[in-house]
Image 1 (cartoon, rainbow, N blue to C red):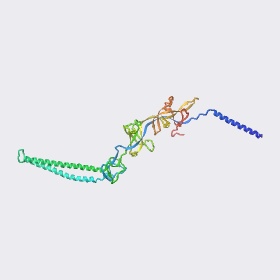
Image 2 (tube, one colour):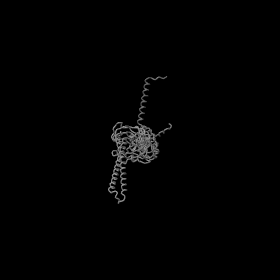
Image 3 (cartoon, rainbow, N blue to C red):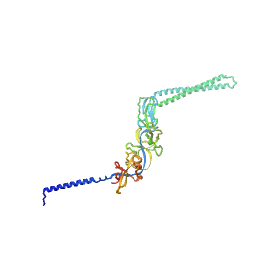
Image 4 (tube, rainbow, N blue to C red):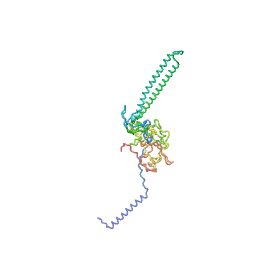
Length: 428
């Protein structure tokens, strides 16, 4: 076994340490002197544009309103004191707040005692006038008989048994009786008209529902004195309901009233998007004149409401079809950079580098878009434009790879690694 002196060992270790230090410094200088390695391609997910049946639906806020002839107000047509509220009718049950009422169903009964007293007095006068009319009729018949008998007694024109003065006197008596008969008839007719007027006035003391619908809240109580025009309750029929929207001129130009471009859907507030089960309606009114203060046009959309899911005076959103359904070239709206105006898209194109190697390069173009479908999250793509006048964007949009994920932060000419997104239900 060989033994080395300690001084020799220390020198050997010192030389080995310096050699390793020079080796490390030399490697570091060689890395700094060389070029930096290229950045790896950025992973992105791409899709191809495809055809799909799609229509344009424009969302508009609006307020629900009853149809013009489906809302009525029960009000006092005469001054009076409330006698009873929601009384039992003779042929129908009593009405109730929130329940459906029929036309002419009694809502409130006013105190009509004074009017009935006037009617009773007028009816008594009616009997007196009828008796006077009978007396006048009898007087006319008596005067007629007297005149005829006198004429028969006189005989021919040469007879001297009856004087001409007596004949004239009986003629005047007949005319007087006939005048009194006409006077009695006129008084009787006038009194009959007054009776009819009082009966019509009595009807005003009974406040009835003008239409069929649901009765609102009663706003009076028994014993309350009402003046003419005082509101008692509202009756509303909401089996069909209108939504009043105010549409800007840019949207109004795409609306039409008649088939087939009159479809509308109610946007469910709990989901935020129109569904197939949402109520279907149509545009029934487009104003010819805009509002002076806003410049918007009133538009009414009518929906069936048999189940009374909608109430009046609610703020809702409706989706109106502004372009018909047809095949369009579409892609997911995630491909659009909508924070730009006009919106931009990132597309991936295959190019050859200096070494004749194929590389996937990202290019940014302006997108020419059409309609949007917020429900399906699709947008119609109509073409591409280059921001550089010398740029040549691809024209065959069906073969273009559009980036839907990983596009933010990319620059023109960056190398990417495209990947098709997995379809739902596909195996890993």
